[in-house]
Image (cartoon, rainbow, N blue to C red; front, side):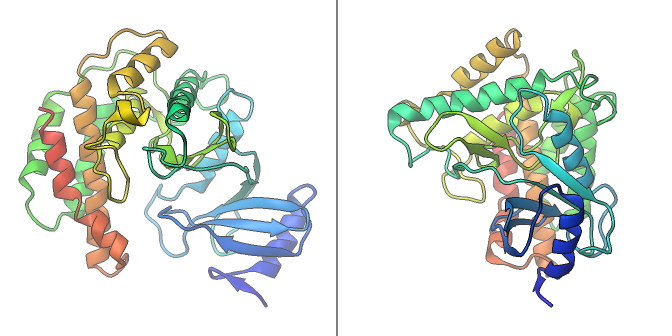
Length: 338
């Protein structure tokens, strides 16, 4: 019996042959590196390559690691301008590999981990950014009712709800007093803008390494990692993307802090925001610093959760410790926007 990441490859192969059209074994399995909370695997079969995303084994928090939601949004977007992998099969029978999982197509292309795009010539970089913002605008323009996602999120003020969620998460993971986090927890609710538009599909983790580009071309082939997607305010994605670009050069998420974007051939934040507004037909964005500050707060809360798990021995590797130690610095960057 062959095992991979605690599941039986032979059982999986038989199951997929019965449920994925054209699937033929034998299969070899390779786990993708990275920090995804839903373990992800490359399946190489006689019939081609596929990608499997599963819930991690063990007891899970309610609504966490919802691979069924990921599968649903991939299916819904298949007939839209938003490029995604083809959702092939969702398995809700936990007996097959021990948890829910889904299989999607493997999309060949290139992924960039550094937003400075050192792999590309200076005159090629701007077009990649243009493609990312065009993809973001296309996603936010999706008619969620027409594609069956009208109930994909809750109503009400998206940012007010998110501030409450991430404050609760932070308190549950808090290990010491961080003045900047306390300042954000007080400031954000008091400055939360009113909602003025209809909820749209938001990705929740819109950063450059969550995209596959057509190799050698400035075209997005697939948007990855929909785990945090929901219905909400589109400025959450735009601000999060710009926030990521403000981060230091060396960290869990590489940013562009301290670099000359003009010399790099990378658009300024002002140019990114202007392009997005033009593509979506909206005017200037008020309260921009609020959206950026919220993004820093949210990422700081996530980092604190990683720190708590590392201290408890559940994520006790060097990368987890490094991520966890970012909490205070991220919060300070958010406070600097007041």
